[in-house]
Amino acid sequence: MSTRDDVLARLRAAGGAATSGEKIGRDLSISRAAVAKHVAALRSRGYTISAAPGSGYRLVSAPNLPVPAEVAPLVCDPLWVRIEGKEVTASTNDDARQLAGSGAPEGTVVVAGSQTAGRGRLGRQWQSPEGGVYLSMVFRPALAPASIAPLALVVGLGVIEALETFGVTARLKWPNDVLLDGGKVAGILLEMSAEADRVEWVVAGVGINVVPLAGSGVPGAAFLAADGSVPGCPGVSRPSVAAAVLDAVAPVYRRFLAEGFGPLAAIWNGSDALQGQAVVVRTAQGEEVAEGIAEGVDAEGRLLVFSDAGMTRVVAGEVTLKGRA
Ligand code: BT5
Image (tube, rainbow, N blue to C red; front, top):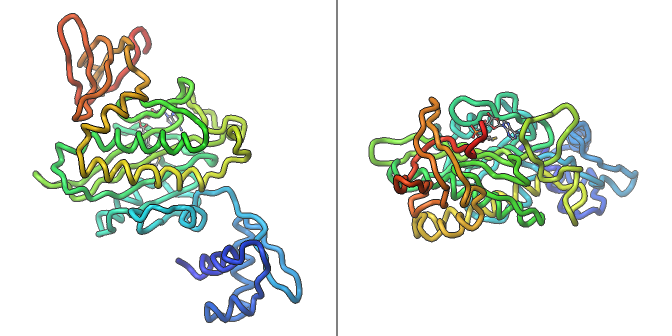
């Protein structure tokens, strides 16, 4: 944490009461003038901090930004040991990969308020304007590379549980989409580094569309708070969405490590957006892998597609509803 974050933590700890610059300075072993400088820097970042002579500084409001200083105080699960990030970055997955590559522990997280080079799978773009939540989690599961694929489904389960805490019921589209009213509200990108028989690290990135902002038109996208709020939750806070995702993903991840994907498959199937639908599955190159009725996933997270020719267990591919592009 920077000294600026420390000053913010003191103001927050006062719970809306005023704290003198002198006391903050004493606690942090810095001068009153230095405290004033940090307060000015916080104000320029969107914090409203009142100052009254004789009583001191009071935190009135914080910006609606999923940055570490806002997200970390809301995260409860002990899996998350380190939360990094900034307002704008190129890609939180790139940042998390770099951290993982230089030894960052499992439970390291990178958050951002917008991305300039957000990525989807297979080199596709993830539009990442201000108004969304972008986060990447570092996992170090003691698993073989071949057992990792269901982790995207595990993270998806965590994301829909998190959205449920805002009263929003989303559905899952194999393998990595989260849908709301048919539109894509979130996407998941899994990347890993592995040796032949051992995973070194996995970075799971999640992008969530929270509030639509003018000029940020994303075709086919849905938003958690379409008009800036969700029922019962006016002015939905992006830091709380980020924290809810982290706190929902952690227990599902632990269960996956302890019991495998088998017991989670039934839960996943309960939120399957494709259940019973006629689908076509193609490779990234457009080659058809399967065509038929989607009937959920198996204990390894493979999509089951039934046709007259029998059942296909699909390991990877792009799913479209039959008759659509
Ligand atoms: C995904 O890829 O859905 C994975 C997206 C992962 C994004 C997160 S954000 C944090 C972390 N850092 C990163 O750089 N990435 C991760 P895919 O299934 O390939 O879907 C990509 C497609 O979704 C695009 O080709 C568009 O059609 C569509 N799309 C792009 N941006 C979108 C958005 N904001 N909302 C909805 N759909 C979008």
